[in-house]
Image (tube, rainbow, N blue to C red; front, side, top):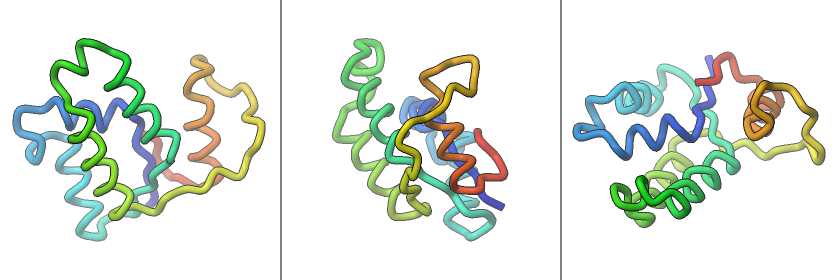
Length: 113
């Protein structure tokens, strides 16, 4: 089983008061134990960092260095997707998420969370 997680899932993890016991923490633990293959998109990493930098509400609660550490750990744990589509077609209701849908399709994800 292969799963790709959206940027908001990682932001939720970073905002959690008990990250390891959070839903995302449980998902990451399962991936680390080989229960499924975690897919990771460079676009997701870019989105997480952009949101932490650009949204004052997130910037007050999440240090960019903390986000960078998490993203580096995820990249070590996961299968990093190399996007192979130059022009992403319009697919979803939110055009900003089309890259994520394309990455999920290209990587053969069973789930997009």
